[in-house]
Image (cartoon, rainbow, N blue to C red; front, side, top):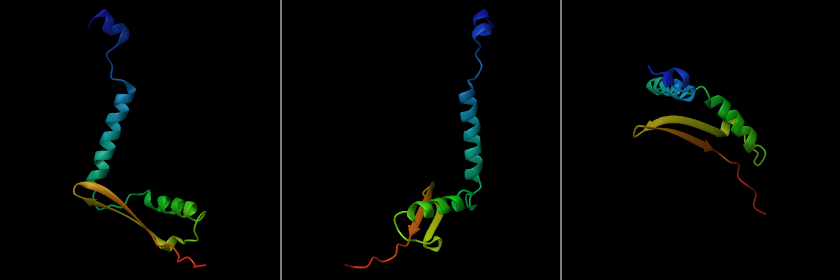
Length: 87
């Protein structure tokens, strides 16, 4: 080791360490196929809050699903909107 290496170090940066750890976590989560992500109930609730500002919709009318298609994760959102009265 040279003096420059000792002074300035050649340690791996914390951002690189965090990125590597995140990649490991993501790989582990993707390996657990068939499991419903734990964020879906929260996502459904928050979507209902936002939608209720503009449209009268109930939680039963919001369907969220996640599946794999062609090696990609697909998040599908279906919202049944109430019919509007014609004026």
